[in-house]
Image (cartoon, rainbow, N blue to C red):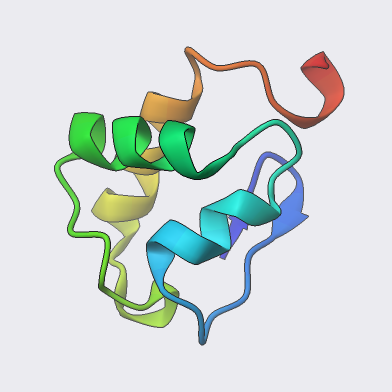
Length: 68
């Protein structure tokens, strides 16, 4: 999966994998997943396209990667 120009590891849990984005920490991940209504314990490879879009939309309100 690719979010904000960064490849996210497929074998990791979503809550851990999102911390690979520069500017996203554990507390931000909880907020993003809550906004996107996604369980933190699922693996990245099991996410659907809709789930990926929800995560991307939730991340739009946070400065990450190039914005920083």
